[in-house]
Image (cartoon, rainbow, N blue to C red; front, side, top):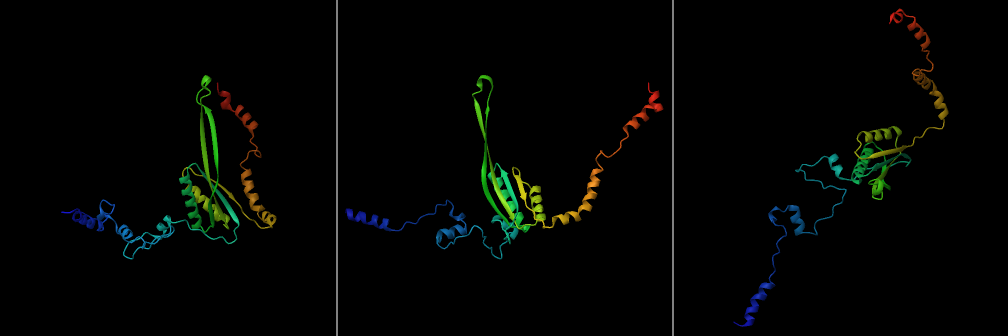
Length: 239
């Protein structure tokens, strides 16, 4: 057999398309979605991060309130944009801080408060150097560092009572390792003096009730009580 007769079957075998096996060890366990994406990669469309696909009618789905936990917090639009409260959150842990910021924004939405943020604030870095030992080992020192992360959430066009309810709700359900500091602004009418004069009667009553608890205006009669005890028969008979 000539050399040409040997090379021809080899070329025919190499020219045939080779069936590429999938990389999965168990192709039977591949889901329908993954098989469709492998077969038609261009047919699969892009899905936004803030949208969830609607399941079929025959498939059970989660409630809308539960589905909202997987999306970004909803926000109210302000009408005038007047600041009502600045809430500053502090923590040493970034995951705990981001989690509580998300919780505060969701609580503000359901209380009908327009919230903005969280805005990252400059971190606070603190360092200490302490000696490890004493006497001749004073040069052996150790350094400690503490970094405080901060976020700012601002409430605009919020009623003072609603803002207080929001802050009380956050304080009641406070997350561990989170510190809170709030600055509130309240607006009063121009005739503040007339309002104070009208409330003076009720304020005077509460002031009198509190002043009665003080002992400055009371006559204790200590001297008379001591004389009565010394002159009593029971004290005289006591050996």
